[in-house]
Image: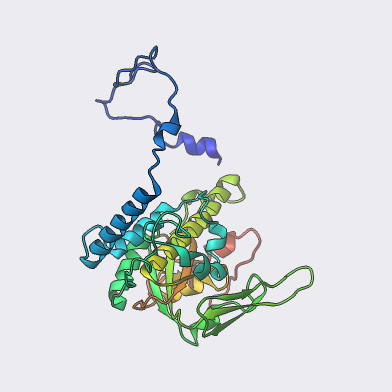
Length: 346
């Protein structure tokens, strides 16, 4: 299987309804006199105003924002502004680095400077705090519904929540992938001391904030072409799933921060599948993936984020998947490296 086969399996790229006609090259339905067309000077777009006028506009904008938030104007509430902030930033943006933003040690440092106009470092607008807008307040149930809606909007297909306690804190690795000992403390933001795996094997540490006592678990599915294993086509589906997870995490942090709350990214510091199981986003399959009735095992990542936003926990599910895996064994029998157990019981 290759990209040529994938292309041939799809309809014509330019397929259109019968009533859509094709015209000659360079002859669209808008009339163009090419003999009159010249290059446009894009510098003409920049129309500068005086510093005083700009200040006047900013003050008026601030007044309108405060009024809209206070009156809960539909489409211009604090939640809506948080959604706009989140959507403004994209892969390739020079405002931040996604690979850093999804790491827990960065989450409450970089994002402290986000404002309601969707910019950073107060460069283009005023922050929520400067505007005097209080942080978002909602019940755990309202907050849970809100976060689920945001994550569905971003592309996640299943969302659940876990209340952090002494039992499920054990789902974090220690040392983790970055050779850090994980602990919890009364800190305002994650305190990270990077470890070294090689050479030297030096232990680091990561202190997570006690105030972040809720966890958001969200499913990132992957394309079915990943089943064509040991091919570049398969790797494309796999890599895209991880990339989407990183971008969604970064945008979720922006959303939470605009509301006045922190979001601590996963950064491979814990067992994401374990939290997916605890949150009810699926069950543990024989191949040690999160498996659920909606995607089967085609889940690239059950990513997660710690937050101090109050959330209502969701329960684990039983759809018969773990029991089915006890007797199916197909993945273990087909595994090229014989890496999966064939035992009847875990």
